[in-house]
Length: 202
Picture 1 (cartoon, helix red, strand yellow):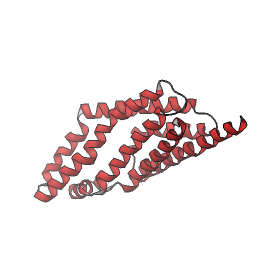
Picture 2 (cartoon, rainbow, N blue to C red):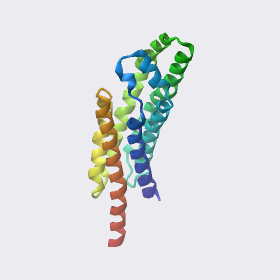
Picture 3 (cartoon, one colour):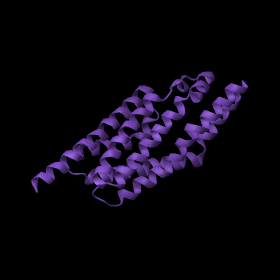
Picture 4 (cartoon, rainbow, N blue to C red):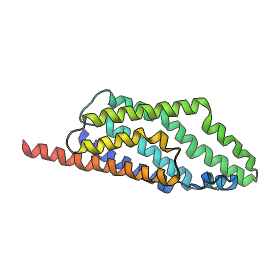
């Protein structure tokens, strides 16, 4: 049962990680405050970030319910718990701020965006969460068996690259999300085949 749950959650995580950059409005990267406001206020802004949150939560669940258990089964969920508040600020805080700014015609309100995103506590918690999530994913990948292991290793590499990819252009971030999805789909598919092969050999 746990193995089935883990496979399902890996697939859900893959779909959600791909949806995040594909749905996310990228006009906030144009350097224009009006475009930034419209990007933040778009209904796709919270939807895409919630997709990212679902991706992280599902990945943590996939690791926590994996067949082989160890320190990674709690390190990854702790890391995800630490990074999710930042996504909440992005998804709902910036969306509400931008909608208020546009409705009032006072775009100066968007000056709060930097404080909401870049204060030391938020950044430290987010970075620590990413490090712990990456460490847990690496531990999980190293204990995955069969061909699924190569997809798990690819997942671990891409999760470890999650922080630096934030500083790349939208096309790179989108490609990263799709690659992470494919890796997780591979884990889900090959974990099932490995388990089926083990049963047939018994």
